[in-house]
Length: 74
Ligand SMILES: [Zn+2]
Image 1 (cartoon, rainbow, N blue to C red):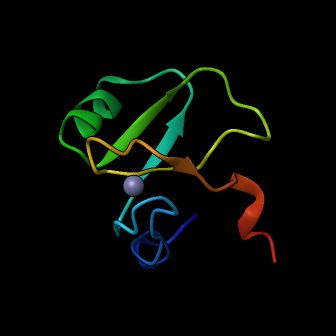
Image 2 (image 1 turned 135 degrees about the horizontal axis):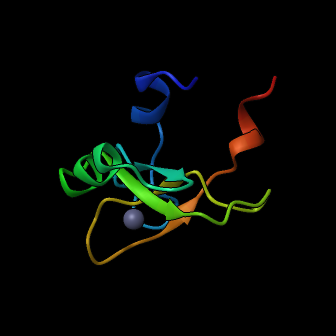
Image 3 (image 1 turned 135 degrees about the vertical axis):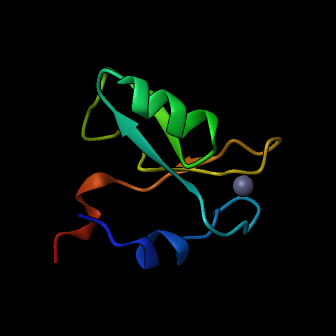
């Protein structure tokens, strides 16, 4: 599990906006849709690959996506 502090420490590589949305993959439940609408997460859809990004910038006109789910393996 990622800790909130780790997410908050992320900055957009394009515009330096803090606190990106974490992209959640897989079939979206009603709770996930509610969280996405509330701006807590981003929905990445059902297709997940090793190249799928982990974060999406929350600045509306940026929409940069970056990070890799495997990156937190020390
Ligand atoms: Zn950005």
